[in-house]
Image (tube, rainbow over all chains, first blue to last red; front, side, top):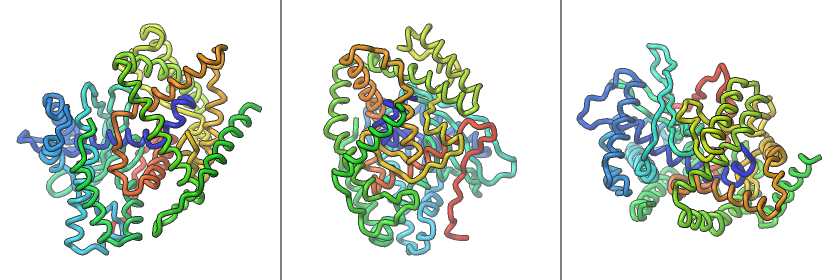
Amino acid sequence: MTSIDRGHMKSHQTIQKYCAVVLSSLFLAVSGANAQAVDQSTPDGLIKTVVSDVMASVKSDPEIQKGNIPRIVDLVEKKIVPYTDMRRTTEMAMGQNWKKASPEQQTQLVSEFKNLLIRTYSGALSQLRDQTIQFKPLRAAPDDKEVIVKTVVIGRGDPVPLDYRLEKTASGWRVYDMNIMGVWLVEAYRNQFANQISQSGVEGLVKFLQDRNKQLAAAKPAN
Amino acid sequence: MPLLRSLKRIVLLGLVGALVGCASIPAGIERSPHDPWEPFNRSVFEFNEGLDTYVLKPVVAGYRFVLPEFVRDGIYNFFSNYSDIYTALQNLLQGKPDYAFSDLMRVVVNTTFGLGGLIDMATPGGLPKHKEDWGQTFGVWGIPSGPYVVLPFFGPSNVRDTFGTAADLESDYLFSYVKDIGLRNSITGLRVVNARNTYYEAGDLLDGAALDKYSFVRDAYIQRRAYQINEGRDDEEPLMPVYENPYQ
């Protein structure tokens, strides 16, 4: 890559791109409930089914492509959220601070964090058009309780690596973290949460997320 | 030495950035061990943000309004094909000859069948694009990243990648054969606009996602560079961060 390409743009735009895809992926990753039997017995099977299902839904829904946010949120809730473990995502992002939160605060944090992810990235999902997903072979032992499923989103522009971290739970495999172009979501939020908590406590973090989500809900869709 | 000249230019730009004034760190924020120059970096970050909002983004909006999508795609593919030459070279320097060969094949395929690079025929043909730069090559050679730095205009970086960017600028010599200065500057401008355009649709996603945009960008950059340097190695393992489990 040349200097100019990587120059100025490298900064937050690049990261915006990761984020854009994040959602697509978070969505893709976790979704899947729509009546169809989703194969939850293997982690890569789960990802494949859910991603394909979400892609098909987006491509066949002109409302979503126009950026109809409530519709996208609905799709995410139905097809992605059931295959995620947002509580674990939140716990890991909170780290040692998790225990400082009361049970009510913990519930609030999980739900606000989930909404933040859905809200910020829903625009990305509406931009899915001619992308295809390449699934890499799974490298894991049969008795692994935690695996990474690697995929690459191929479309216009550069290919975007998108990996899902799954954990085996009593009810099947669940996604709790994802990696977009080399950046783990949970890892990226750990400092964000820790800083907010050291500035204004767990209560301050809850309030921050609530306010942010209200703002985002009131904002107009990006496209 | 030309490399020194580029480096000097970047450092000078950095000093200009510093004159913009040091931004204060929000109270209560925990300092990152990777970012000892945070007050300076924050001020340059603000400068870049302003530049993007008031200059680059409006220009890109105009670019999208004037040019139809297929033309923009052609421009993107053209510069992307050009940069594949450098990627091939970097992969060779990183000891990945198979990648380098694949990158070279991309250039051959796209330059011929892809009408001089305007169409990317190689990706659907099974030759995936890689992207490598000097900073990554230095990293593969074992040079540590050093502290995090935000460069004016260029954005997030670190000490190693600052040298990398200088080397990138210096080794990017093909267009310097264009003798007409006006034309050469136009090409540079077009490359900047094209690069920013790639991320246009993602919109202001990051503004919504980050609690503190500066540290979010920084932490993501540090993670991403480590990932890029690791990727493509024979013994490549997914870097699985170990999170402290609050219940353990």
